[in-house]
Length: 427
Image 1 (cartoon, rainbow, N blue to C red):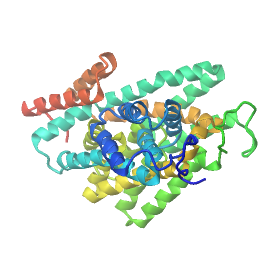
Image 2: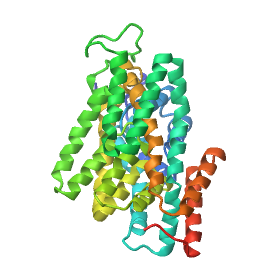
Image 3: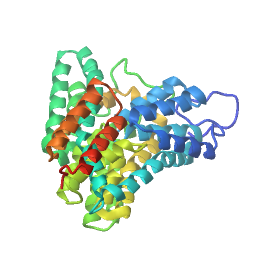
Image 4: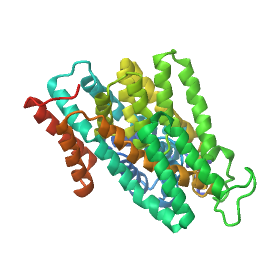
């Protein structure tokens, strides 16, 4: 099927770019760049901005297709809101639009976080910078708890409606993800894959390739292909990114490339799931101290655009500006590969029962990993006043329901005051 139909009055099948495209390349660069600049608050803010632009204001997509795209992106590993931004740009301007829109969405936050990394991750930052970093870093564990709590209730509700056996498995997946994040961070990917494959095997024990059971949903005029199954897509993206990692120099850059690859191609759940994946690499390879890692996570939260930008801060600490750019390139490349390779099948993916079963296992595991990541983040705190800041951040985020950016800025301000008053700072 061609990428775009010939101009004419006929309706265009869902999931295909329209004839002549719906927006100019300049429009895509401008609008997606604007979202990349003002998209503070992580995926919920990004999704709301994309919906307002593409569905409510310009009517480039209808509400059903947009919801299908959200569901499909959540089934894929990597940063879901970034994949959604790439998909929407693909829908209105084809492949070139996907590349331009995805880059415009990513680059503003990348520039900001690399600039801040130069300030906060320097070998001997000024006292006031260390104070802000120590304060904001102290609140990161609270942000992780809030992120997990926001996902916990809807996931449990779906499991509860599916029967007692499903509830038991849900709890086991949640516990496995939490324990892996707290104890064996570098191997978390294997645990999440195991949760997903276990649920898939329990619900669909038939041989691969056998027909779907009666009543399974499929989109009209679209034949589901193996490329859209989550494990196969992850393997393909992992192979491509691994080739890029091999092409760079061995040693430190290769280790850094592998770390970024895990974030971009294998991290089901995106967002805070990347923390246990990166922490062991960042601290274990001595790219940064535990306190600096907390600073990097905080920077990823307070800058606009995808939260996965944190990987650029880790790359900066490992190898300077070049390391930050390399880490971002490897971490975000799989998102472009997933969308450009399978965007036309997104409406089918949402109704694919095997893909949904895999996510029903990996999803609770990812939520558990987000909650479990709070344990090593809290353990990294070294000063008593940081625990007080953490408690205040929990109150702001969970009881008063204030925003993440506000809580981190308030925690940073507290750290600044303490540092200027002569209080002890982490080393």
